[in-house]
Image (tube, rainbow, N blue to C red):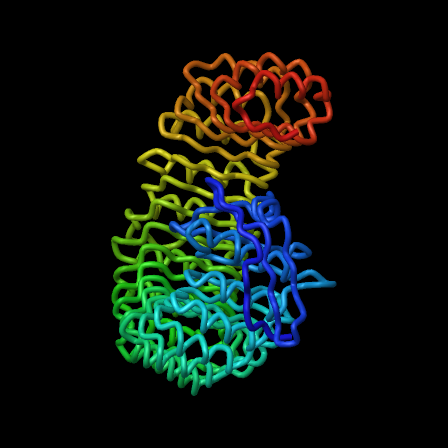
Length: 563
């Protein structure tokens, strides 16, 4: 059923100027009637949101119907016009179709952003209407739209020259022709994201990238059937690209990444993320580091062919690098990390290691290396091989850390972390030790003594050996502490009492989730702490009764309480 016209059957004008009824007629003279528009448009699920100065509507699941879209088209016209529309899913019985999208196209000419997710009944006809009725469109997001093809995308390209952002995901009928049209007609395109579209290949992508080379700054390419040729085009024409995200490009080899780096076109690239690309090797990684002179943020995920030698070579040539993140890069060992830190220059500020199984303690004596005095943030998460030797070496190499995250390192002990704490010269601000099961009060006492004057955030979630002795050290030394997580620890009411009488402590967030030793006896102590708290978590505290929770909620009315 195609939509040909919309006529307003009745308009009630008041201070809010809301519409009461609209009748939508098709060529077959069937009608879609919408009544009580005011009530529908102002209900909670369609409440008015201001985003970037736009009037915004979002329909999700069973609430996404043609009737509601027609109501939105009428109701928003009296409020300056709809600026953004998001449709997530569709009513299984009478969901969104071309008819509803056409109502938006005819009633919302000021629409600037449209997002369609999982709406199988919307096809080219609906997108054609949007193209004709909404020439100001700037952002288009299509995800799981199997009925939209190149024809709909070409119509948008020809009619919406202001398009700046395009996201296409899991759209099986969109391919090279649609991308070529976008490149040809949308000269203002700044951001492109394409994921899991089997018909997209080198021909369409290279045409788009070369046509939009002057202004295109953000590019995401995930799970596409492209080859080395597309990466060569990126390396040559990506002169304006600042953010590049490449994932699951199984047909791209080492040569593609090597050419992309050596083409010398990515001089403005600041952030690069590469995930599950077998073409990322030691050789190609060094080429990328050498060719991207202004690269500041590098993230490698599941790059199984990157080893120590490639990582160290990359660190040497990437002179502007400020942030390095490695996830599941299992050929990288402790030697690669230490070598990278020692050769990264003076700009690296952040190092993150996640699930890197190849990192294990080296038992032999390591040579003295140049310290990395610029590093401020160190995160080693869920790397089971990291132990005392590794942490001690990192502490010596990075003496000016402010942020330390060792969450999930269940194997480390006091002996492993104490040297790291003692090497930090400037004072730690944020420390996350969640999941470090074997740490004791000795660590907290040392942390409080050495860094209490600067410490603001401390996470001890799951540290089951931490007791009231730690709270005594915190109360005496950590005057700036604002966020404390003691979940699933061994603290008791006595520890909460000590904390509540500490002066001048100004906790904003306190988590005691799963602390079986905290009971109703802590009521007055928590009330005292609540004078500054904005967040309190007492979930799964089985010794705290419902009545105590109710008293806390009543007393601490400014504090969000999870119970």
